[in-house]
Length: 124
Image (cartoon, rainbow, N blue to C red; front, side):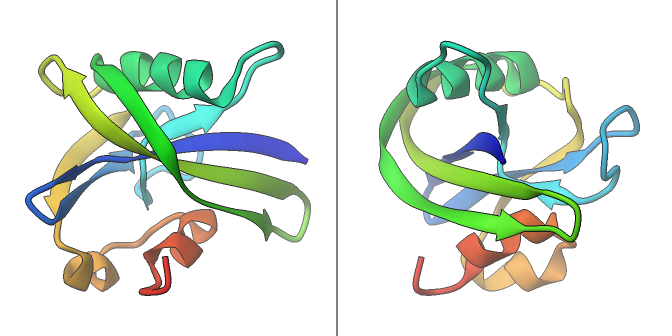
């Protein structure tokens, strides 16, 4: 099982999402920014590192927003989503070829990674 930590970054009822760039797996699919945890990292350390690498921002990580296991046919992911309380820096496109602030009612207009789809439901 692979552990992934992702960010829920909210601004005026819009959420930050990114489209995976051409050098990434699952190119063209939308996701909440984040990535795989490395050995010895806490969830917070992982997310701080991933947000710096992907978006070049320094983030203040908040509470756990949601967690679940997502099973693909060949692999399982344990996904943790954390709220980001604040961040510093200008958003950059390091892993994504597009970044958008999206209202929740418009999530259905984006082709999300299958593993991120459960977080889009109203119960989350």
